[in-house]
Image (cartoon, rainbow, N blue to C red; front, side, top):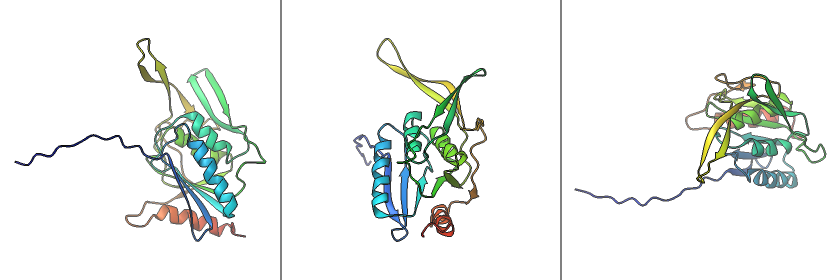
Length: 212
């Protein structure tokens, strides 16, 4: 009989990874989780792309299914200068706008493609929708998951905390995507070996004359 002892370890997944692809032409950012601090990593990536004179950006939100609204909003501010980010609906008659209020002089001013798939959910969906509806980016891949729950961390008297759904998020134009997801502009299936969705994003950026 073989006995194997396993030692548990905490594995922390990096919230963000970035690189320059397509022979130095395209900046690529993969966000795994929209958690606090990811906006600072995103800003560092954007600044490096500016210094490298890339001609377009691919923001990969595939399989991004967690995070908070504040971090997603902070990412959006760096890509689009203004307009509404989302609408928070607490009840049928209680709605409040979440504004981007970005700075036009510092926002990214080159073309953006956002990659999404059926595992893109919640705040990542709202981020993708905001960039699409504000005319900042096109979405490529597959329709998103369709989870609009707004979750709040509520602290208890005993020091513990619970996560509770206290509302839902609507897109910047007021669309309810619950169970529907966010539709893409270019529908592309994922490849078994090659990343067909990323390849399509690079082709679209090149076809739009973004390398002039």
